[in-house]
Image (cartoon, rainbow, N blue to C red):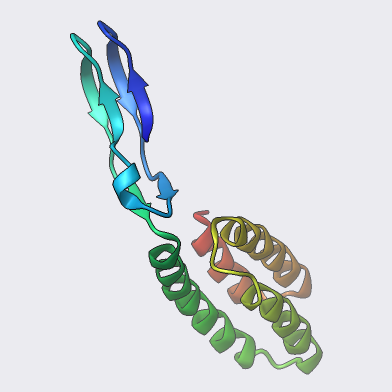
Length: 138
């Protein structure tokens, strides 16, 4: 398995392949992320931050990242004075916690975090929204 395959004699000036995550059952199936065939040339290659995981190692990584996010969010939600706002945000947070630690689950997690950010902003919980924004890369 190759993520990018450049054919024979190909010339590429700038190739940027950053922060890709590949999840495969058998890591030995991944031959290389970028394969350059005979007489191929890449002048500048930027391939920073790429990862290859098994489903189990990906789940461990995702669960660790999510645990930090949940801890930060729970801490700030508990500081809110309005109990109704706390309950509403905790319900949304529990929905996020129920998502599986898979590639699809992570995609849905990011979408859910975006919705939590908007919901927290609408409720006036700016610190909660800022935590979500930070995790989303704003």
